[in-house]
Image (cartoon, rainbow, N blue to C red; front, side, top):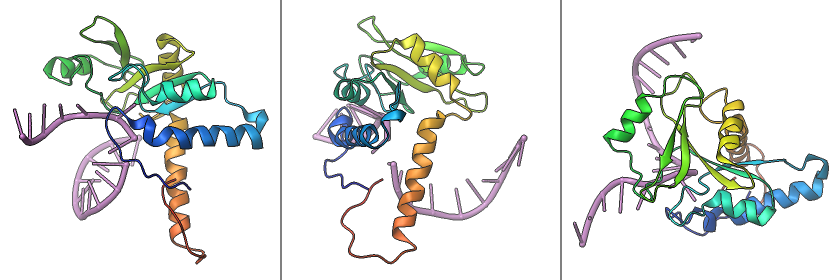
Length: 181
DNA sequence: GCGACAG
DNA sequence: ATCTTGTCGC
């Protein structure tokens, strides 16, 4: 459990959450070095960002581990917006694995919209975080999706919420201090 | 000036 | 992200 103080501001997610993510990775390295991850799936963006450096890039640099940015919503940046054209492109995604590039006004491909499963029309927005190419990132995310959200992120979400529940209900302990995962 | 814009 | 009721489908 950690106590976050920084507010959420679009474009500055890393400044709010990366300290705890780094802490978590370091703790794993210290307690279970044999489980050192080969890659991290990050709930947020990488290069697809206002300044081309989202939380997936921050975490990658700070841990020196390959990172993939996995966003559930499109961050409006460099001309990218969910307008009618974008919605049409989403409709063109027919099956799991189908994608379309997210090309900014600058002409650079900042990421890829990916239909991660056959049961959801809403795509995932994948972008490079650190030490991995976009193609590999997309292939990796697709490979671990049973549902729309890749299983590693989905499980982290489910288990962290369950942990919070447990902390608040059952064992009447002492005086708490903070909240959040 | 207001709204939208990862979580 | 969180809140919140019912509903649809496997």
